Amino acid sequence: MTTPSPDDWQYPYGTRQRYHLQHVHLFASDLSATIEFYRTWFDAEVIWDGDVAGARNVFMKIGIGAMHLYDQPPRGDGRNAVHHLGMQVVGLAELYDRMKAAGLHIPNPIRPFGGSGGYFMLGAPDGVVIEVFEPGNPHEPAVRKYYGFQG
Image 1 (cartoon, rainbow, N blue to C red):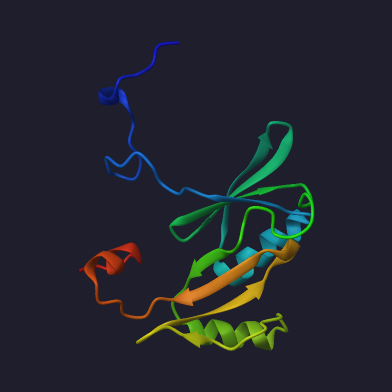
Image 2: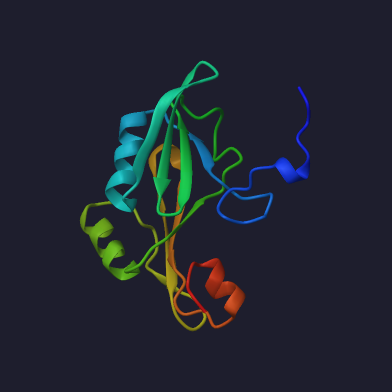
């Protein structure tokens, strides 16, 4: 096998950047329940469901982000190497109210950021911690772009 030169590399996402955080991979002790949780609350879409290295894997898209699930229970206690998933949303208060009304355990109310926006934390299947946030109106152009806003 010959190693391609940098001129032959295929750059994703329409950029010449070489590195991207592309997905988070989680263990799922009840794959169906985990898929349904992310579909219900974050409009996740199953893109692919198949075998990788002898284990069922499900690839999901949530907005512009991606998540992969192993059909295996988490290994060991605690969160393993994943601290939390950051879910950027539009309409934070509305989602918070719906989740509370549905009986999801959300230990604290929405916590505001400095000038606008805010976040809350909740638990998902298998002890995964999720930060649900709305960035508000960041003023720095680099931060606006980071969160997907123009200008």
